[in-house]
Length: 256
Length: 359
Image (cartoon, rainbow over all chains, first blue to last red; front, top):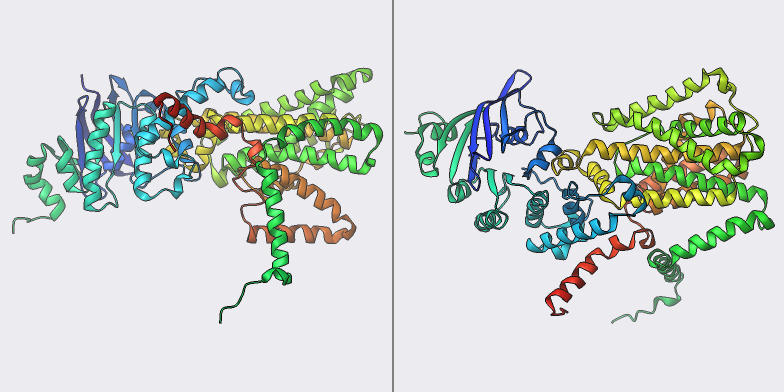
């Protein structure tokens, strides 16, 4: 059975159709890319999967459980985590707190225990603070643990965002333009990094990207969106030569 | 020719040295974790001894009680405005609920000879009453934020005021006179410390971090799995509980309450104390509430100029130090030990387990 399954997902903003009849099946362990020109509806797809928007029509299932209609935090609990196109860290909180917040659903103590710092509070805090620090160490961020997130260099912020997403304990990771603002050398490193993360955490990854170099380099399958509609899908090599894709990116009559 | 630097004789650097000295002293107080137990013990002993032996006059004692009440109000409002990043302007509404609930108990329901013994429970009842109302107000906050939520809290304050004005049984616009003076220095100290500790504990917990993540980015917070509705509900309930407690203490020191006491101006007072002390800081709330209350009294001889001087100081503070006195930082002794040393503990644990001490 597919890990994630989107059937005929359609979404309107007022009268504007942002995504129409979107279908996707993700098998466990796959790395799939969504590409398309600006405004094609790629991020909207992410927002529909994670529950930020509620799909106007269609259904999305994770492991057979319906996602449409659930709140974002409930969907995260089911095992989907994401990063953002423009980094959305908790800027004025420490790097450690950024990760600890993502453990929110794992910490098991009641609000009474939190008010008085009694009962399970201490043991749970210790357990998950250490887990958070282990995770930061894994991403070579532990030396910044008590630094404010906004003071980190750009590349580290990107890594922290992925670390934070992984702290929620996802099966499926959604990466929204992970290579935005990176130079070719950094993109090379990022490609290795993504493959490494997938292996270490046993993840399925769906990513949005503009950088063809990255998409063609690591994605096993691609889906191309334009004006909310899926115009092509298949292996990277097929997509590269697909006439509709060339048209969407280069304009009509691209053969001249 | 190279000038020899011998600046110690110039008056400018003397002033500079004094500032340095003061800063060092300030840091010593801020960083010394022994300060906390000392403050608790000495404060508690003094709160009993001072009224008993009349160490300071009645007027100063009254000011100290008001400082305590204001600290409770400021810390609890800081939870919403500072940590959660919303703008609540209706704190006096919760205070009114606490004040009225407790005053009804002490003037109408309880026999006079039991009042002193039951006072802590009466204050608790005031807090619980306000907390229940806070629970209701948290519901609009699920969907509304920013300026719009500010309007909701503003409307709430007005509603509370006019509801009280229209219930004849509790005195309507005339209020409740002749409330027993039950708020003593030890009780004020107890409730102030309780409010500070409980709110601090909440902030340094899973839920408190959730509250702060809402301030930073609510959508990201939701997407990281934080149950934002639950966290908002907890924050509003806790905040209004302590506003109610402060209201109960306030009613039993003022000995007379009317709806007019709890209007929007009272809420504004608390707001000023929060932003004077600095948002997102419990230390700031304590210092802000103390500074504001004391300054208002010190400036009393200036008569009507007081209300010109005080706002002027605020304007200058906002221009030169917009984050307030503390602004998102905390005295080290107010941070729970575990949280403060978590990273150190983790490093030590790793050294032990790997068996090869680094550095």
